[in-house]
Length: 241
Image 1 (cartoon, one colour):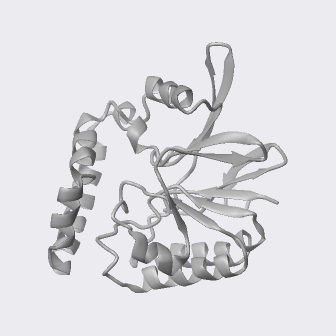
Image 2: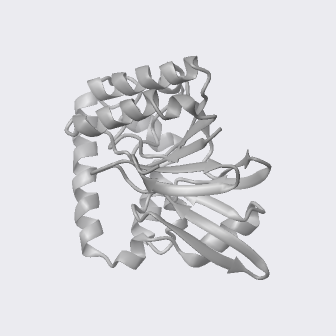
């Protein structure tokens, strides 16, 4: 059976057609898979498990239905939804995995990451990431009123877009040395991640080892999915099969 990997859907009430695309994907192709792995940024923003909108409700319902059919869903936090917690995960019946998780796919050790920690040249982002992942920052943020959190998230998205347009593309892409170090640290030859919105399959050498880095695509305009079965890893736009 096929194992499926997706990332960077950025689901948001302003883009209901992409939410419908995801729900349809879960109820059709994913229902026939051995497992579904979501490598972060399922949502455009997540300000806490105590908020509910139609998008969050639809997604939780679809994923809970998938698990009820016997297909497990595993989730790695992204940079937009790192506050997604145990309460929502239970509703959606998905298992939260640490960023940088090694899984077994048909006897092969494969490293899964969101990918933002590999972008080590982006010092400004890494500084914010370090701050926002601290328990103290998260507790303070989650205790703020919902309206304040929503305003913060909207401002953060706008600033992120301005920042991305203002810096060189190489700054916001992964650092080659960081990639090699991750492969060595986890003793794997295959890495799958998202975050950069630059879908591709990169082959690289680490000494005498041949390695592969697969970058998942985003879902802003259409779906992107990686299918793994019988030793074949196929990265394609959703619908191309």
